[in-house]
Image 1 (tube, rainbow, N blue to C red):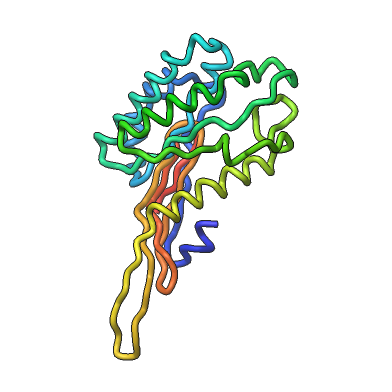
Image 2 (image 1 turned 90 degrees about the vertical axis):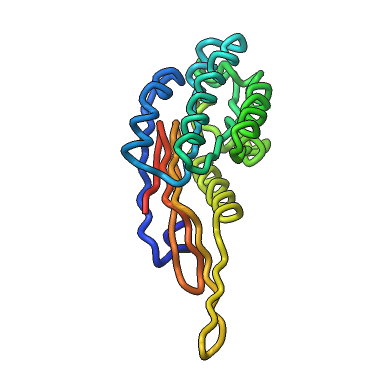
Length: 214
């Protein structure tokens, strides 16, 4: 999607996600990821393993580590996107134990994101009631679910980070768009690019999952 829209930019997605990682582990390695990738935009999607293991009582602990990562992004000077969790389907397996309080935790993430000056990405709303977007374990998205996530991130990046540029020329006016680079940190990814008569997006990176770099 990004490459098609931002044809004059080279977009690199850096996925720093680690399967099975807990938020504390992600927070511990996050500063070095920022120094290495040096993103303009960071997408955080972290902590679902904590919630499914610790249950409702683990919300404060998990949120504190995600908040520490959000603060690192702010201190670093990058733009911040924090993704809420998609729905889980309880009963399909033992992995989806946080289904009953996902929205309760997402509300915490929304408030934390606002306090850190970031943008909250509501994946729960993006998935809606379509249980077909969640795989047989009740936790991980299906390919269609991951496509929905990608479209949601793309729409957020396009709406918030493209910058229109107008250049007067002897033959008329040329309008282009620019978006800053992005980085995704946590269990997800981010994007960036530029193009005349089109748009420019930022370098993006996601940690622990993925990142995009120009």
